[in-house]
Length: 331
Ligand code: PBG
Image (cartoon, rainbow, N blue to C red):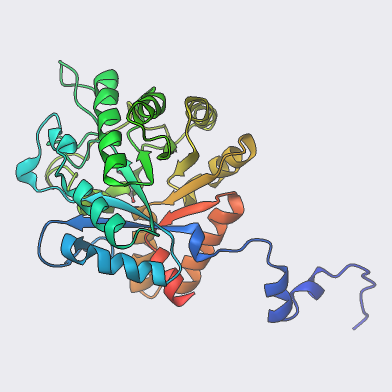
């Protein structure tokens, strides 16, 4: 065989495992991962069938569970309550109950594992009978933007008072970041940050999450549409606009969600701001990898790593992922 005369042979740098690991351009450390946690008032762990390996955690076990995450090197959790259906109302008023499950859970974590950073979702969907992120208008055919923002600002203050390090508005109402910032500051909560779900798409990948918090419609009803407030998956410029607005309104961290199908948006966001960028690898992204692995069609560990690295490579500083705990444990 004649040898090719090639001065540049890129494969030289991929020759050994040592070289490959030394030259990896993107790295993933446990402190870059945030574990979403579902909390229940029930007595026992409640496995979520559509999220293999994920259970709702009983409040009395939460502190112990969080101490375990901290020991694994994770530094942040995002808390989501599974609200008792009897407490749900059309106006989601349980969100403003000072004794609501989310607030008790926050106090529990901050009392016992204060080193862990707590990010709390701000939206009404765990509390409303209709499952929307806000209250409905008089006609009942859309979410009332300004009325919802007023409630969310109060909700954010309660979460800050309970000890949340960050509030994370996920509702996609116009003007909510500014209103939340003003309400927090007026209450003396200048130290509480805002991680804004800035580019949150009306995605089909949220299904398992809605099972976990119980915000899905009945099995026989059409899935709920959030298209009047969440972004159209067809749009890229619209995300840039939302990101700009949230930064101008005072967000501390900007988030793109989902992550894997929206790597271009993560990259755009990374290049348009000097703020930290977070990405949420959502429930459906996790569930699809597990489902394929269960059938023997994918190697879960390798697919998990690749999915997370791709999100980092696109420009995310932080990743919210249901894989956080296993990734921290197994590498
Ligand atoms: C609700 C909220 C959702 C998620 C996070 N916060 C669902 C929704 O908008 O319906 C989805 C997260 C996931 O799928 O993992 N405001």
